[in-house]
Length: 63
Image (tube, rainbow, N blue to C red):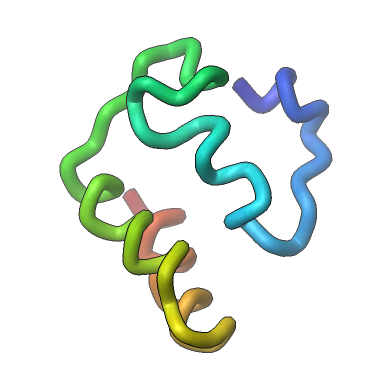
C-alpha cells in the first residue's frame, strides 16, 4: 500500500485516511482490518483541533 502513495504522505494524515481505511476503502488492497483502528480513526478524523487529533494519530501508529 505504501507504493500506491509513493512513500509521499503529507503532514496531515487525514488527507489519505479514507483511501486506506476502513477495510472497504479503495486502496486497502491487503484487506487490513483492526477493531482498534475502527475506534481510533473516527476520533482522529473528527477531533476538534490538531493537538487532540495528534494524540489519536499517535495511538493509530502504535496499532
